[in-house]
Picture 1 (cartoon, rainbow, N blue to C red):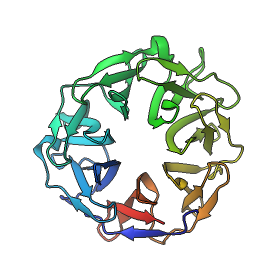
Picture 2 (picture 1 turned 180 degrees about the horizontal axis):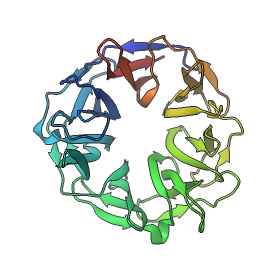
Picture 3 (picture 1 turned 90 degrees about the horizontal axis):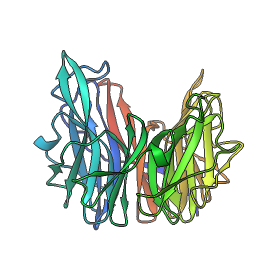
Picture 4 (picture 1 turned 120 degrees about the vertical axis):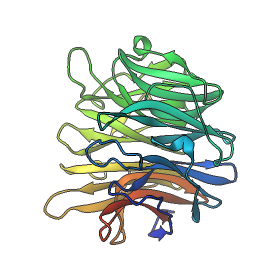
Amino acid sequence: MGFTRLERLAFPEPLPHVYGGSDVRGAVQFGDGYVAVGEVNGGCCDGSFSTDTHGVVWRSADGLAWTLEPRAAVFDLARPMGLASDGHRLVAIGVTITDADGQTVDHGAVWVSDDGQAWQRGPAVPFFTAVVAATDGFVAAADGSDGPEMWASPDGLHWSIAATSSTLGQGSIRAMSMTPAGIVAVGSGSPGSQSTNVAVAWRSTDGVHWTRATPGPWSSNATMSMIAVSGSSIVAVGTDLAAAAALWRSVDGLTWTREPSAPIGDTGASIWGIIAGSRGFLVVGSIEGNLPRRIVWQSADGVAWTELETPDDFRADMARGIQAGDDLVLFTMGFDAAAGRAIPQAWSVR
């Protein structure tokens, strides 16, 4: 049975209420509940340094009613940008910032927690672009000086490099997910001397040994940026060189079929997120132009898509999500027109 409606949930906005606003950057199921992380963007929108910038944590018992955790010093001057959990430990990835003549300088960072309340920051790490819980710990991706890198950790705190461009090849990893076939990573690459304009995917069963998908018509003139899994179906989304949204399907992470018409396949369309649960997929995006609009598409299998009606106050920016029971909970970056700032929004998708 497909989804039929979106209902906005009460979702606490963190302090301070700054012009740059706040948003959710990652959410996971954890134990018997759920945890989300995000940021207050004090330095919007010119990259200026601001002590208002800090990481934020929300918790929920059911995915519907959320509480805001007290501000923690470990997240001051930080931006959590992703979250993973093995059921026992939470690992957040992101950056800490320092002041360089009034402008921010970012440094890679990780934080871990065993309860979603007390957090510890780990030793210095590269800027990780994605993180997943693996069989024996956690795996994260980074853009190294010579190309993509994979890092592994048994506890989320102590990391070591597991694979480099010598085995991964050239490219940039933008998203990862655990699938029935193993860990699947997606991104973009540069074949030979060409510019970065091909979709790339990798698969691994242990986070150390990786196989790169063979390029073909599916990968040309496009980039993958996000991935989601429902059952045995893997769906990746991104953009082609015509500035149109693109979508791919796979069951093994190595053999991909590019859909001839993505859910939001118009030139000028943007996909802000893809989330999945046991009932299928949601793709969230927008179409710009004379009549810009935000769109949510749903599919049970990643093949047939239908548009889901959205409320008037729905915003599609920065979409993240989790499964809560049989439903999905979608997080987006909304906008408070009266106050003139971005605000986090949460939606129940039923």
